[in-house]
Image (cartoon, rainbow, N blue to C red; front, side, top):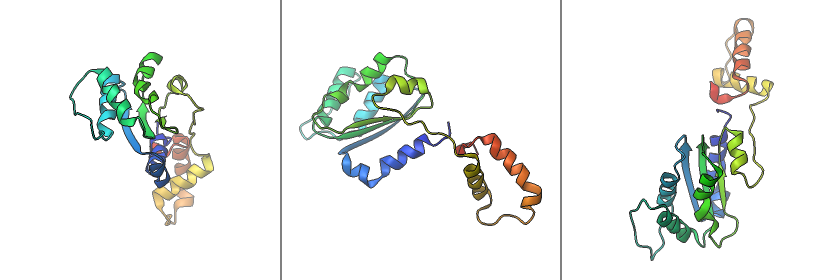
Length: 178
């Protein structure tokens, strides 16, 4: 946690080139609640309805998934499932993905962020990208800039530099930790 997975993904998601490439973009924060029905409902609610679609309120997973498949049939989409903490089985994962395999448009993508390598391995269809903390010198420079901006105190090198290095060392290159 804190290495920047969500921030990195937000930058990609909000980039103009990404918005030009995908007709439909959906962002769902998952966390610890990997409930296929609930996630399917959230995703469906983010996808614009088709012109001839009749609005339905249902908790029937099959009907919800058919609605998603219909809405996305000819559209290239990006679905972001952010911060997944658990998924009990590969079957559960495949059930969630079912409506996204039906479309005609090529180049669609489902992007997942997780801090758990085991989940990433279970979910992957392409190589995962594992983000690491910053190198120690780069992190220390960043740490100083966050604390002091451009104006370090006069007594910094004498009194505070050792303390700052100790703190930075304990954070192990993860900026969100402070």
